[in-house]
Length: 188
Length: 277
Ligand SMILES: C[S@@+](CC[C@H](N)C(=O)[O-])C[C@H]1O[C@@H](n2cnc3c(N)ncnc32)[C@H](O)[C@@H]1O
Image 1 (tube, rainbow over the protein chains, first blue to last red):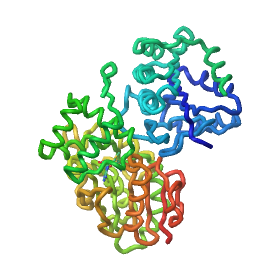
Image 2 (cartoon, rainbow over the protein chains, first blue to last red):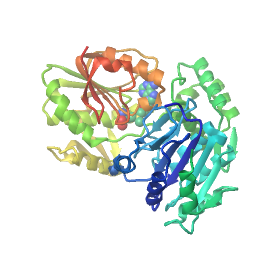
Image 3 (tube, protein in one colour):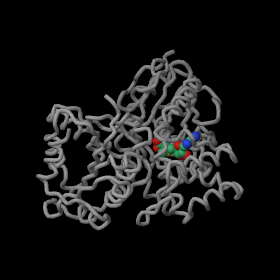
Image 4 (spheres, each protein chain N blue to C red):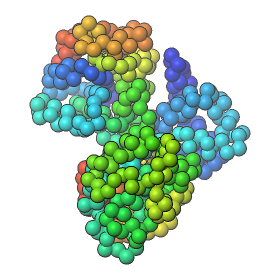
């Protein structure tokens, strides 16, 4: 599969899992971009989410592997316990450095590094969560010309993360859940 | 260099300039490190030291030994005792029985950071009654980390989380029997400390220095690009005796490397390999 020239990022924490599962379910069988997700989760859960989603959606949902090419039409999760970064040669790298915002993987780290490589070919979503990880990264995506979308805080089970996202950015789009889902449904 | 709301970001070209400067004035060669990961480390360094790129370049060129300090701050030293407890369970089950057949067992913990991995291994060797026949070489690029490793002193906070890891390895002894607590820290028992020799070794530029039955290099190669990974794997291959074992970190595998044909997979999940030719 060719390297993806467009990337869609999703960052979520507490309260975001249901929406993520739902929007992945809406994906068409083929799309151009690569989708990369950082979901804060307990290290013990390891790769269970990828496995159960793969089974349910009958498509390969992968844990990103160090030095793996970022391919179009693929969905990747950051593995538990590691930061996920995008490298200039359009591969992933993993990194076990300090937690950022008490999180590893940190949404900021993925957003920041992806923004600098994919620039205006980067779209980032920040969803429900109880901390402020991802807000700064979202702003970096914006600064590098990418598109940023925040889940409507009124619809997010936990508002802290979307609100922090709004505070840190200049011009985010605020979408409700059905807008978000339909975006993924209409990908091509 | 750009500043976005208190965040320092440098450009990749700027990173290359720093790598180039370091290469020219010292033996430090960072050109094979993963670029985005390294870039974040440099940005963090600038933030912590309150420096900008001009300051940094000046310091690299003009301040004696600055580059040594700089690189120690760039590398990621995060480690734990019994990190990935199930790896140590697998080591005990799949590797130790082989090691037992050797009269002398030499082990290399490459990129050992502050020593936790090496000491965990000595405890495992003790529990399986082969510590007296074993010797571990712990090496790292960072003298600062090695200094801590040699002392074998860790804060009680850390010991607490190491104990949790240890309990998951179905141990045959109490973790507290392996160290002596003092005030707010604990020192690893002398019987373990005397079995490890810590010294500097740079995986990028230094050569093989012995032959080993077991090499562990965990959570080091994720910081290297594929070419450098390949070179380092060759160094490990050359440093292993036939039927010796290579253990990589839980996110590091031989899968994408040609050299895998010379190894047998012993544990796919925890990346334990045996050199077979
Ligand atoms: C994250 S620590 C891994 C510690 C331990 N192996 C573990 O898995 O917990 C990575 C170590 O690799 C060392 N390192 C980085 N580059 C190196 C090089 N070129 N040669 C030797 N060690 C290096 C760093 O100094 C750091 O201590």
